[in-house]
Length: 514
Image (tube, rainbow, N blue to C red; front, side, top):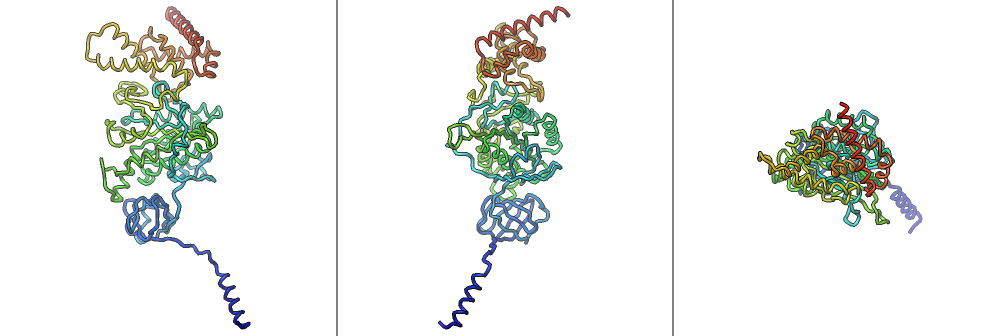
């Protein structure tokens, strides 16, 4: 090799090595069809289900259907600007939302973007909206109560932290009220430094209704630990479809940090309708009631993410995510979506329209409601007294059914009916009127001991409040002891029995003075 040849080779090597190898290779396709918020694209052969794709104007879409030579994409925004012939490219990423403490007290859309006229959300934490549910080995058993402040629920249908409890009923029967009351009842935990972080997902509702709920939580101080994820009725079906998954990702952040979290899906009937709309527009085969065949999987993969998580190194509870999905029955609890959700969840709170129209608040049908966790997640004090109360209530319900067409009822049966009527009144609660666990336990024990047997049914609500005031005034030590031990001792039961007698004497004296 001559000297000149060597110089030429060296210069060629230097030239080759100096070539910039940072080549950005993108897989690009073209829109072939756009209509009703659905775009069809061809050319992206390796695109994945659930992958985010980006259009020419930087608008994002989500791949929700893959065919042999094309894919179908749901659009979130700028729907009118996406046209056939536009270029679309893969992002090679799945859809994620911001999460963290920065979202507390905020109202965001399904993409995690602020819609509450405050500053844009800046968070260093992000989470995929679609994540695998915790495995069986990573789950811890549910044994801590999530108190709602509603006597009928905490005593008869207890909810545990990590449970999935369905709330179902007809339109305007108080489903949302129960969920909001549960969020409001966590204010005491927040003030004690043991917060249960809440996420409320509104799907297909009017913005005016959502604004009222947010204003209520802000007024009560519950917005400090609550995030609103909103996909209103005016937004496209695509935003309504991903809303619960985005809300779940936000709630999972707190669960994975070792905190307790609560998420409310209001409601999954509208979510199923949104997914049906998307599926029919993507020309998928309709099934029962025109819902696609995978509607059960759509909801199960969402609700299975609610769980108690086991600590990685210790065999103990680490964090939990409790789910309260809401479903509208439309006078038929055996419809497709309600029965699907009943089979997925760990129990249901059933609201009865007839009870609601007759003035029962909350209108909970105890006979049709169930918690499959049962008393495992119930405060011992309530557990001690609730069993007898629930048995008497079930007997009352059966007697009421059998005797409604009978004119003459024997004295024993009439006595049971009167006692049942009084207990139904005891369970009455006004909207956002919440009771602590100790007050609930004292009321139920007092009812079992016959406190309300001597008073007319119409006066039960008044006596309930007066008796609790009497106890808080004259038995401060008893209340503190009950708050610490969370169960009744024999001495405490005797003291409450004595308080009942003193209260009845006071009532008799006040009536005589009148």
